[in-house]
Amino acid sequence: MKEILYAPWRDEYIAGHEVDSCVFCNITFTPQDDENHRVLYRDEHCFIVMNLYPYTPGHFMIIPHLHTDKLEELDSTVWLHMSDLAQKCVRLLKEGFKAHGVNIGMNLGAAGGAGIAEHIHMHLVPRWNRDTNFITSIAQNRVYSTDFIKVYQRIKSLIPKYIKSE
Image (cartoon, rainbow, N blue to C red; front, side):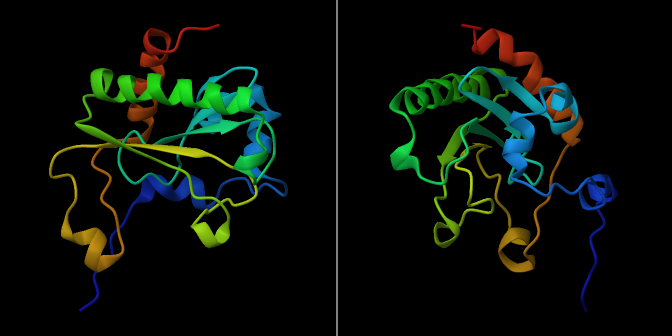
């Protein structure tokens, strides 16, 4: 018997505004919509945004403003800045969000598993001891244990403490 899991809070993502261009470039060029896009932070090199389809609560991405699918061609200044932000964000997730660990990763290109292959981005996924369960393995579903907006607001409130404006 096949069971159906309902997640009505995801309705806004399914029925949401469709973007004709790169979704990350759209966020880059519309800072006035940062709250709607769930942007946590932005500066001259990149922005940090919540993943709308998270693996775990608190899953977000660091994304350069430059539209490129080639990490090897990204200016080293931007790459080093992203790496610096990643270090600060790991501290934020461990100390401020009480994660026991963090997965950091980049899927480069469609063949590398990137869902949005045309614009590189770095994932930071907070993890907790025993946070995996059978449902992901056998039912191809994830259980998101808390309200997405509350998680966004909590992490956003931590940004000033862990990421100082330069």
